[in-house]
Length: 172
Image (cartoon, rainbow, N blue to C red; front, side):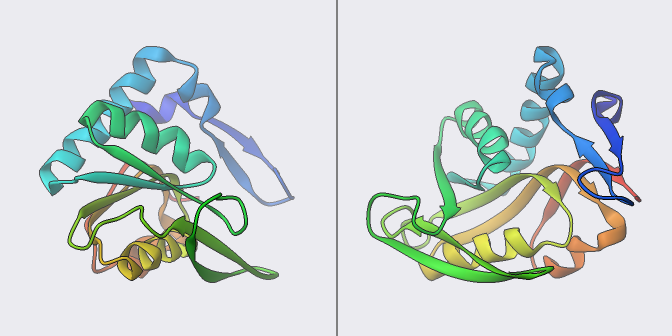
């Protein structure tokens, strides 16, 4: 399926020079969204995923239906201070500063096979941090899956030790 034609590209958003890939146009098209989740699920099945982990917020939009399609659980990764029970956290750097992500301490069982899912792979910073959380809990990351990959930003290189799958690739 030609998923790329379902993505709206908005130039100079959120700042000048950025070519923003808007997934809301794919999400609102039921048959295309269903097909995209189905295709991601085929990858996840091959990897033997037992649980799906996704970072907020758009990782929820991809990860929850993916987990549902597979009949497995979904684990949310949130900004620090947003989860109600005991958590672990990991920091990561942004272009200007740093931030931290958190996961419930009881979210992943040691040895559990985890697939990390998100809407977009850019530099790989958020996903690397998410993977670090999974590993802190003893989970085995069996793959990472995305709707979109921005190949020019080379996030895949940062994730070189994992199987990376993306439905749509953009050079810019």
